[in-house]
Length: 304
Image (cartoon, rainbow, N blue to C red):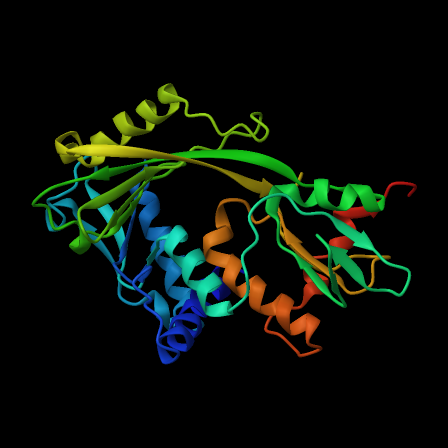
């Protein structure tokens, strides 16, 4: 699904641009992939090469020596994919909400089932509903008698801001492990993100974790220490017990459609799953078969 999700951004950004929306949230800046044992890069290259025919968006693939990327340190060789992209999630979300034309309601909402088969959400009635509420899906469906295999995962990152540095020309750096170094245009570099499975819905900043990510990032990008300032972001991902996503219609709850469990792949696969959910609601064929991501495995009636 990750490959299809990445491919879908071409269609998404094209449609948005045709409708007059700014798509600078998406930039094919290239991606640098590292391995602790860089002899494994050859196998990674061969695997990626087999995907080129299906996904030409990958672009140029090559194994390069470190001197070709003087801005970064801490490795001898890397795999470069020119078509790799970075996405600014906050800007993507704001753009999609704006393009939808729908009102954004801030705060908690409740879903109620009515006798006529429709649904009520905060005083408004709907024939069909899409629940894309991430780790809060269980809290939304529990009052209707469902158990949901979705848990919250805490993620933290830092955004570093620089003066006089052309960060927009730098590729995304993805070492082996959870660390990513993601440069954006305008002097910003994001470093993260943590994957904390035991923190529930806690959104407090843990400086120790962020400083650990910073120190690791400096081994690859020493200039991180020249940042003029930084800010911190904390969010909640949704993941299932087997770390697999799911989407489709809720069993025994006709015309209620859900998606969750995307975890840290949400930015890559979220827009594609969203499009396929809309296709399901509109009785159109989509590019994904929801049977391969069964809701019944993760959403069940409490008495079952």
